[in-house]
Image (cartoon, rainbow, N blue to C red; front, side, top):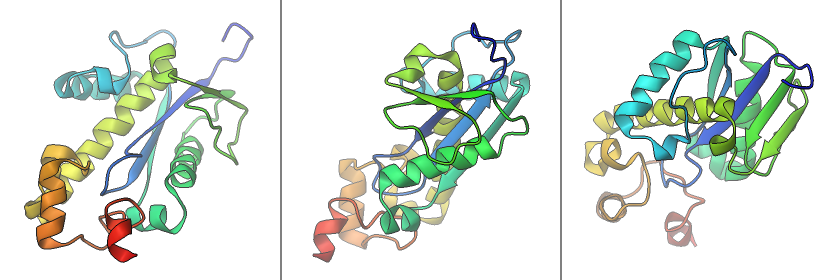
Length: 193
């Protein structure tokens, strides 16, 4: 903003590591006059605080968009490509074109409609990225909780698809679910070999 660019989009993703479910990315252009208090890396906030900030961000941001890439697409490409594509789609979904994007991590998504900069630990260094981190995490957690209602044996509402002991045991006992589980991830990858 100091260099004269007014509309800055923060971009982050959630769900690169789980054994099930999509990777979700969010892009947020905060209103510089209404920056929500308490923005931080979503992993450092309680679930309740993330939910509260989700509502505040969506009510006060100039623009926000969320995108997800499913487990089968992750398996067909790889998790990095899928995460970067979700980021690209989130930015393209913004109602306002940003002048610049700040992305959490090392990589800039190809095909963005604006210049971008990758920031390691960006969700702790940029309030815009922190806001995107919260939107992506809350959206993905909600998606997994809903999915858990259709697949109650896997406890998705408890672990959001991460490789907990409960989840691994459920996959061992009941088998993985096509379209939900990531077959390119260990331990499912080894099962297919």
